[in-house]
Image (tube, rainbow, N blue to C red):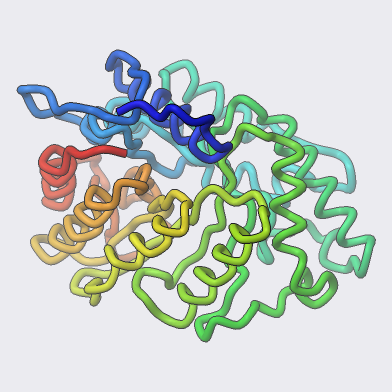
Amino acid sequence: MTDQLPRPRSVRRRLALATAAVAAAGIAAVSALVFTSPAQAATTLGASAAESGRYFGAAVAGNRLSEAGYANTLGTEFNSVVAENAMKWDATEPNPGQFNFSGGDQIVSWAQARGMAVRGHTLVWHAQQPGWVEGLTGNNLRNAMVNHITGVANHYEGDVFAWDVVNEAFEWDGSRRQSNLQQQLGNGWIEEAFRAADAADPNARLCYNDYGTDGINAKSTAIYNMVRDFQSRGVPIDCVGFQTHVSAGDNLSSYQSNLQRFAELGVDVEITELDVGGSGSGQAATYETVVNACMAVSRCTGITVWGVTDKYSWRDDDPLLFDDNYQKKQAYTAVLNALNEGGGTC
């Protein structure tokens, strides 16, 4: 299928992402977002996701890359990475205007050497701010935020295909989180952040990212309304990230329909921090539900699990696809089968 009209900015980004995902898996690049499944099913997560133009990534800690099991599993199974902490504000700008990109650069270089795509996380967040930011007020905080976004996004321009521009700015009831950013800058600060990111890297896909949005609820609806408003006013937003920190057996009955309603606004959706507490068939079934939902929504461009192995997960309920010894769990098989059976377009 060929689009005869000039593609808007977000569509050009989706094309670039699809091409990157396919290349990362060693599959020939294509000129449209339509993919056909091969006769033989893929045997790794990244290669299987790439067959439909999607990515399957993992959150990465640079200090783990020297561990053979960690590096081998990451490089073999995934076609995308995101830094767990190395690109956050406290890591990249510990002092005003003095940037330190060493941690992020390590991850980018490692990934690029293996043909893997890189997501950026996160430009602005209420947590993990350096101490010098926490006491700023008014325009001093505004200028610091814009300067930070500009410095980081400029540095990684061309290396990062998508940014979580703003992270976790809403409460469970749909109200704005009363962070220093909200209290000092007012309701316009999220829009300001997206406009600054767009100016700093016009080709990166710009995402809003949050947790607790797994179904249609007060929080996801508030974000939906923000995205709809942004779309109506031309604020540059390309995608919404659904963290999806869940547990086996959680009610995900409206998960797919929630993804779909955002997609129908004209933005892509991404599962950005997936992990599922539990074990055995229950954990596998929940992973399968999430992956099937993404595969069923054409604008769901990819999935990232929040870590490679249970050994280093931020949770203590063994939520990932590989155990402490890098052995594939039942959930891994469920995910791979769902990716291989999903096919479709992206």
